[in-house]
Image (cartoon, rainbow, N blue to C red; front, side):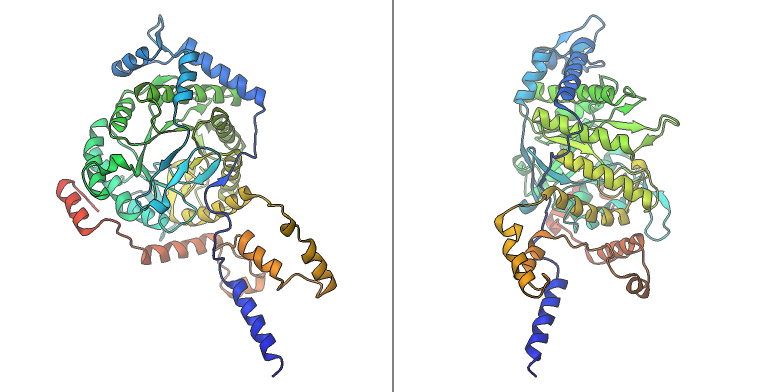
Length: 505
């Protein structure tokens, strides 16, 4: 009987060890910037070349309205009709640009602050295929998939914001597509979200829908909880008229934006890494100049996404060492300029959830985080070089992000953490650290415990069925989709929206 209290105490300790930590040891928003692939002199040369491109080569195909605004802000007309953006003008716009701002969630507790040195993994992409949960094969993405992806990621703590990750290919009308994409985001998550507008005339009516979800006319503009993804610059070095029109409309309705440059090495930009970075920087700076010429200080994520192709085939390459390098370098350059940075990672070329998937996603995402990318796009759920989206990938990537955030948190060195007294107590006592208060405190505070990765002994794993990571992720995705059915629109809000728009799901 004398041993009963000891057993009881041991059981309590075992139960405590098995329980998940009460606090996430490394939540989103950890500090990046530890990895610097470029020397200071390299950055200044890339920046100088970008400024020279903007001043001497200038931008082509500038829409008339934008041309007037740029000329009024200090641009000059070149003999060949292109628009020169002089260095002084560019640097004035960098100085005036928003350096930090909030991406609001409809739930304020889920809002995030962009800029500085904080790192957040999120989503992006416009996949036209979904990796089917049942067949394990790719098929065209649908509106139902978008609703399901939105519901799924709503439960994932390490996905800080959600951009529609797939295109509903079963909606042929562009306006209905934009409306139903936005509706899916509003209905199934209260995180910060992002969407795209095919045409400028789609913005105002969809903002009216945002107002309905936000509580009434004008509420969205006061606290915008949706960001726009726009690519107003087309490589090499020219503007896209439709996207520029969308920029004007987004500014008019106070919609924060990510202006995305997607130059591809060897195709729409030089094949050399330095040349790619210089041109891509110039093009993203052109977007920054445009936005700040229209509305100084307007919230814009400086989304410089240098892309890579396989020069043997011309196919887009979402994984690989070059992608790892140039997106990390892009984050470093944006941080050097003091601008809120957006980069892309985890764009694996793998079609299956396999070793290639793990290597490409792990390398690119950790490098982008260590380099200090504020918003890391494409980092959740994307497969097949952005042509596919996968439910299993969302689950696996969420766990990968937890590991990356933990790596960013680093090692805290203090007198207590150095453990001198704990080491002495263990050596003079039981000869181990199990059960010590110092261990328990570290267990709760310092360690990430995977929800999906298997750490069992081989025999235990085999006896439990020997499921691999894909199978476990498939089962978890199914369980979430079966039980998590949030509807963040009230019946009255949903009715108002359905009365005004052709809601298909």
